[in-house]
Image (cartoon, rainbow, N blue to C red; front, side, top):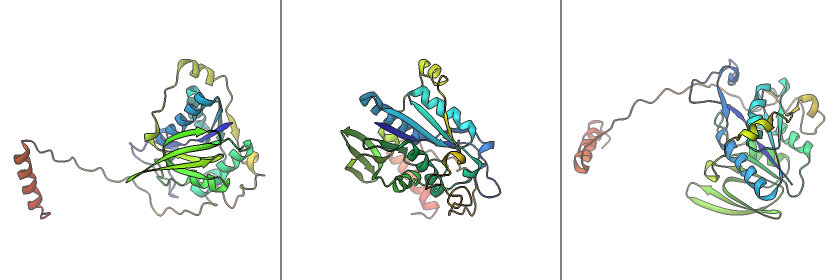
Length: 266
């Protein structure tokens, strides 16, 4: 049994967001972090590994420095890291990205008990599209917004956390599950894992590696093969400081009512 987990190195959006003239993010000039929801997917994979003794393989698409992120995950317990990198893949939107990652996963062979895990969405795009699109392109069932995962043979019972409640879904493997932060708390690297991760090689997949796969075509990958057009991208202005009211209940509500009346809100 294998668990494939997709991860993304994203810009740290707590700082200034730099944008290229073509509307894509200038990732080279920004600090990067591991996408938070993807860390929950990694922890879910490692939890299943602890229970079942399966192999966990992490995939990321990005520039060569993303290898460092994969080594961090290997130091946490991931067995193998796969870096998908090539100039031909640059500028890919969710459609093109899912084509490429699906092809890379497919080269490993998706078997009946295998699971693909992904974060719900990435903080640099917030589209929540890549995981489901990978599932569609590999013709696999999918369950999104997973807040709890239990495996019994070839069946997963997944608790989906929704805005107004939850839904329990049973799905057969192989399948795609996208994970949310409520699912778990990601573990830390340990000293032994840090030493061990540098004894392993990161597998690199390039355009030359994947070009013969049916999903890979220059018309459907990279910036030229991306149907999404970005009209403009900018850093939103910082919000002003809020107003704090102090006093007992009656005094505070009277102040608030006066402020709202002065602004003609009430």
